[in-house]
Image (cartoon, rainbow, N blue to C red; front, side):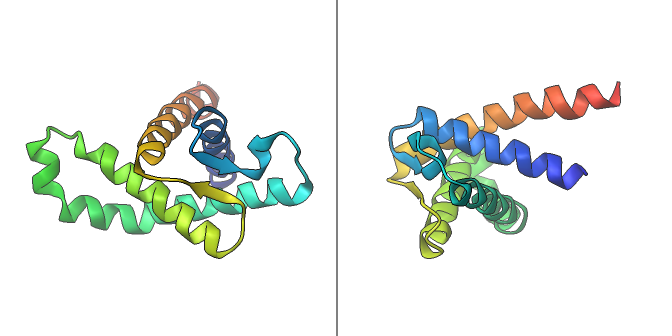
Length: 129
């Protein structure tokens, strides 16, 4: 159940980023949706989760000196790179998810982080009370 909740939170966060950032395209965010678009969103959320759980820790470890020098701000760059990697993988699978550059990826990663944090706080933390 926890994995499904995390998947839904990630999918909603990616959807929010696609709505608010002009350089991020997602079939569901364009207004005309089909069942395939929602399935693609779920697969993109799975890809994003896998990238963040497998590749991100390695990148964070390798860039630790830079992260320390920037007082942690380099984490935003790493998050943007993970979103770009997700976009690259999703394009290879023809899922209709595209991030057009580093600027949209940086803003999108910030939105994904904020929305994920807020939804996790509302859904997961409230169920523990």
